[in-house]
Length: 259
Image 1 (tube, rainbow, N blue to C red):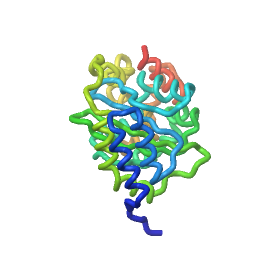
Image 2: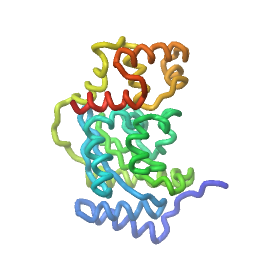
Image 3: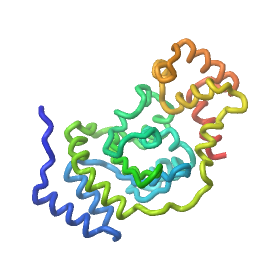
């Protein structure tokens, strides 16, 4: 079936008008969600600023207290460094709408990061609106669906991309601005320094890829080495770290982030 081009019917025109009228007011999140919901349904919306080399800053979320404790508060202490949406921004992706499934390594849904976050709060699919705020600063608006919902379709993604310039401009006008200062590079340095005192540079590199959700084949392809070499380095790294599983690796890395 062919994808349908987004049309600005009377309902969407009114939604755009309401969004513009809400800029700078407490009505903005509601108006923003109304416009997005005219394109696709979602169960939760989270807006987060990612200043360059600083921890993320929560701008808005509609989660309950339990979900917020995991996906906002704990997430900002370091695990965000493994988020495929954040990594896409850091890696130079163009602003736009992306399904997490299209950005994540092929083994992401078997990774400990996925188990610690997505499964615990029962997220089944996610679309990120990646909005460049300037230089290396980004704002990401996450649209998530629960595990009982269908995944976002290509048509929905295409239509979000068509209206992205409006959504992006509105987000930047309402939520854009100079973030609060924080120790520059602190958590970025912690990810880079994880295991650096006992691991070889190659072992540390492979460990970081594992944390980001790469499997042995995808890590080998990314580094341009054989799968056997990856397995050897992974085995040696686990032995040096005193762990035996990916779950233990994730737990150790998390403690390193927040320590």
